[in-house]
Length: 255
Image (cartoon, rainbow, N blue to C red; front, side, top):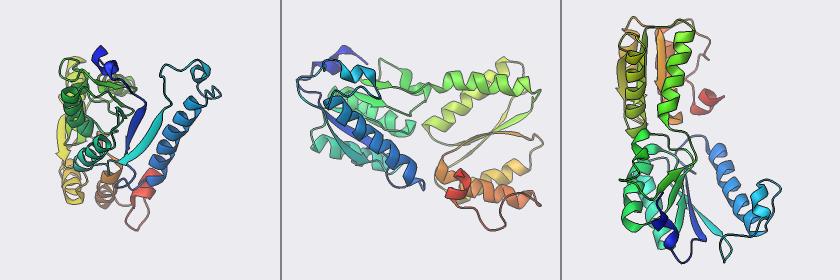
């Protein structure tokens, strides 16, 4: 994140972009939103009980304020949340979570000189400081994660794998990183099978294609809303199976 981000006269108004709906797992995200609001409250009170540095003299002259904006877990929802945050005169943004949304908003942030700090976007695409000078994150990139995945598989002696991935900025880029790392480490070229985000039939079709392959090690890159279609279709190809006999819901997938 470049120094121009901190030239604004007031960075105290923060817009928090969080998927409060559309995830099928609202409790998790509401807890995250509450944590963000609690952090703002403790920073204003100079309460260092959780973050010790909050007890130090504040860097900003005015107290912080935060407002939540629902990204709905989609690119369209993220753009709507960004627009709403701009209307509310947010001077900086925390979020969003998904890399696909962050990629779009980081371009807008660069144009507007708006600081954006994501708490979950891991795509290496976002590491381009020239293209996204006002974007930062508190989450590790997928480059390191891909290396760990392949090292783990090799440690177990598993060589033949298939990468089943959501077809978005995060999933496609992550799959390419794992593919390249596997080849670099001397493993056979993994097969890549993609499916569309939040599209049950696309996810099921990908699993049907997967069932026709010989490799039995699968690296799955998916989001919560994708899991029911994937697991329910997988169960239908591998009976008997420990999954419940009735169709799985997303809540059961997370359990």
